[in-house]
Length: 307
Image 1 (cartoon, rainbow, N blue to C red):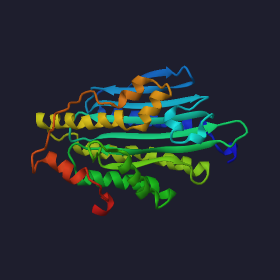
Image 2: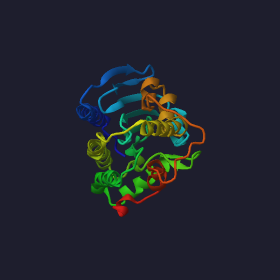
Image 3: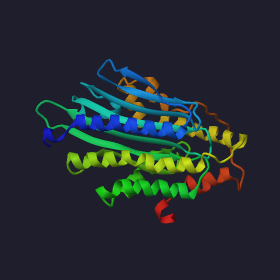
Image 4: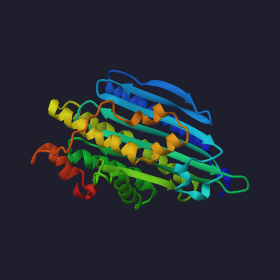
């Protein structure tokens, strides 16, 4: 593919603006505190800016990170999947966020959009986009799930009718804890290695996914943030957050890539919740709202069909 058609500077500019837009919206939604920013450099090349909101009015923790790292050799997390890229220099850039609310009736969410470019002298560049967003409720609401997946579908439709079902299935498969035999949440979108059509088409898809995150999440927060809750709901939230930790540390490829590539550890592990608990062999009470999460929401479902 013609090197001139690939423009990492435009991708970087979009990602920096997306980080600004999301942080402004989340801070406004929180209404009590704002993000603090740390800029960091990677000795081997690149750096980023990490933004963290803690102990706000709505959000217990929200991290929104931008990173742009580059170097002469790819880390094992990349070459074990794509061994043909060994020996190439690379750039990897993206925005990644995880939001942990105070209220257990407001779901945790994760989103990420990213671009990867590998280059070698006298060889065509190899590039792709990736990303998506997923939702992890503690107490399930059918209309929230329907809205989430309708917005995910809307992000994909201009680029092909097949993309939403394909990326939805990929999300269900990726955000899965095999040692628990359960999904992390109700899914959404996940895609990687996306280089279909030309650069403009693929870049457009990534932008659409990034731009649809706030319309997907903000209405759910606004609907649920004022629901009263007590210690029972809080303890269940902390217990379920343990699944989030297990996935990120045991399964997530992004965590492995970031650590192996010499990224900033504090920024990579910002996705972990500030408080969490584990309990031996805990089981929900039959017929409870906690049991309903497992029985009705943490299952493989076609949410659009059910709506």
